[in-house]
Length: 444
Image 1 (cartoon, helix red, strand yellow):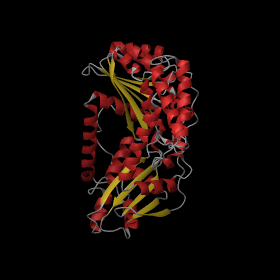
Image 2 (tube, rainbow, N blue to C red):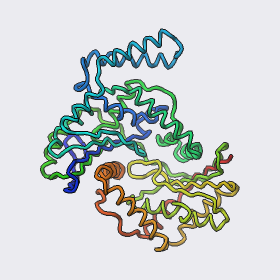
Image 3 (cartoon, rainbow, N blue to C red):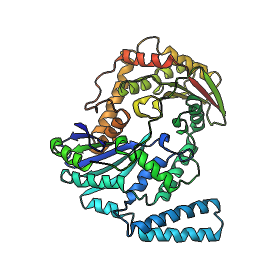
Image 4 (cartoon, helix red, strand yellow):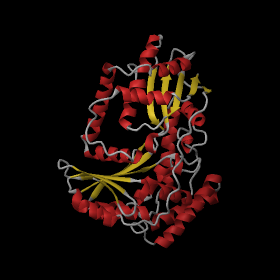
């Protein structure tokens, strides 16, 4: 059952008598479209900080705590500007001590535990985050009321530590990824005026202020932007009116209009990035409307999913057996899938001519529909992935919430895929490769 509550919150209810507990997943956007430049990752950080409680739950004195948090914000900015100034460091320590005295970041989760609701966590995915918890059917109304409180009365305690945790993690991933600089260049060329062009950049060292963090929280957590999925042993006919009463209204301002679709590329764009560890090339095309995400996933896996893929076999025929092939679509993840199809090839034997070879292999892949024998392992892999996700109710709730967020026009998939239409893959790839690509080569 799917419905929209009076406040605009979208719900998907999935009864499952085999799962006595209820897994509740809330997926909300977490991409660069809502983040100020230089503060990429803030959308995830504010969701993590939101677990520290609200002005209603966890505050000894909301008015004094607000003032203390604002003072800490100013002291943090001073410390960032003059980290060696002893007076500034002392002022920061005093403000931090005042905040700790006035707020209890553990109170909110203690209250949830009494409902009961436990295993509260935030899972970051590509383009969105999922707040997930476990409860029981009898507590759905009470848990919902606390989730509304979290949304409407958010204090963002522990924002600084949540932000630093996110920045350090993103910087670490960027630094160990041999293709990071190539991807950043590719996005800059493929979508120069689009917010998603910042998705692959290395996280900066700036510190958000509370106004910026609260603005990002309000924009991403507005009820119209998220999807709640509940999986467990309950009767949807009983649960729906409870949720409609609980999620009745919001005081958050309406979010800004969604980012425009990626504009088609008018001419071939090429670039070279020096200093990579392994010679490589990355190619990207703007995706047309993919329609069915399953067809898109199958097309990406058949085209560039390893050595047995269409591009992988073409490289093998050119004595490039050492090359590794990967394909991602949509990339970056956006609502509706209208971003890019990305093909990446790394070849330790050398990059000379690699870009033209991969470009030709991609275009040659649309000469005829994929053979049934080539699609069978693709189908088996997608079925295995579906089974792995759906055998665990918690994973299932998270996956359904993310899918409902990114593909709002489609109903949740209730069964594993049974077949792949070769003509659908051919049509999607032909429409994609009819456009112009971006080609970025990485050289040592």
